[in-house]
Image 1 (cartoon, rainbow, N blue to C red):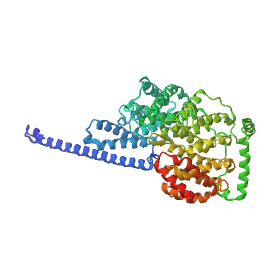
Image 2: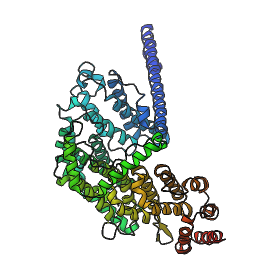
Image 3: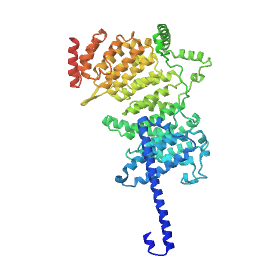
Image 4: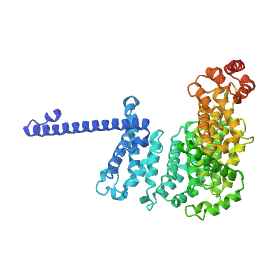
Length: 612
């Protein structure tokens, strides 16, 4: 302004310059206010992200505004945040590292907000105002739905939590019923197959340090959420049409990850697997498990074992307990016969009733794809990562619950038991297979899919898993197997009647007491105590003798100190004749020869205290 004043000295020019100066000051103030509001918004969204981190995003997501007029406003903020995030990438780290952290936190919260707005009960075309207000999108030719899908696609290659939020948001919009006619789901599946999956498979190798693996994980995660059968508004028929397009590349991707997992496991026992590959294997297990559930009708099998009433008031009533024992004995005798023809005859008689599901009695042929799904899930039980094994066990339980015939379930149980035996699949030295098998057996028992006639084969394996300890160099492995075996015993106590579990109580009770007293790890001792407590409460004092007295002595706090567990708690439990000799035998034959010198020393002290 000063330079232009020197050009002309007349009053009119000075007046115009002062007016221009006032306008520039207003623009500067307006821009400063805009930057201040943007910074305040970033801090607010960062605070909401902190709440999501503490309270989980599902609880916070319900509190966000979900009116129809909020869709375009929140999406406009998301687009502005995405543009700002692209600019911040080119800035120096010293100047903008705090803003970069707030940027992805803001994007995460806005993506969660957009997912919540996807449940608006109105057609998105009626909400779209791009024809009138073109400022909401970059181009007037692109609709609101296409802009949302493209924005979510751009976040699928992120390395942080925004990838998970964008996958859920994308799946929520693609699952809307009003978008089925526009074939947005079909277009996205084709894009996922051609642009992401086939491209990575042609590259033959996936580098975990590259952004491509994050894009693959984002695509697989979005597809897994789409095929989630519990809360989907899309029909099963429309989902089944998309499986044929994705089947071959997803199977090849699963095989490649399985070979990569086995190679790393054979070289270094799975100790140096990258986090990206582990998460990708977990997402693939989710995807195939939900595909298997989509193939089968959502009907609970009628042949599953049902314990009956589990009311505390019914347990306190002696007449009700006798009736319950009588009914449990009759049901256990029917199940222990193991004759599947009787199950079919009973099914034919029950199908006559109006309340029964006739579809449960239809013999559905086992598809080749369903067999491949079960094979992938069973291979996931011996994965080197715990989260992959746990996900495989859960999906095996969900899928087995929908199988139409008890013969199919019997084959699944047989395959799980083979993982703990000798052979190529498992073996006594493969702690991963033992851990996954225990988790799978617990899931089957918890859902009533493990029939009583199988307990004669299952219980010895669980008892052996309670003492699983294999030395590897200067350390040993198997604490996770022992912990999973305790969870299996906990599931048995909740699933079966006392009359069914009574023949196996001596072995189970002794193994749980020995583990809670003499295990090397504190979490295993406390897990065994919790499982024993559940057995005493569910199965009664008739099966578990002196159960209440043992629980009061071997509780959560007394087992925290390993020395006290060996010398004091063990002596207080050894006063019962049922447990004295087994405790001495375990210390004499196993713990005295343990690789850890501290356990050998404690075992000698415990034997002295028990004998004295």
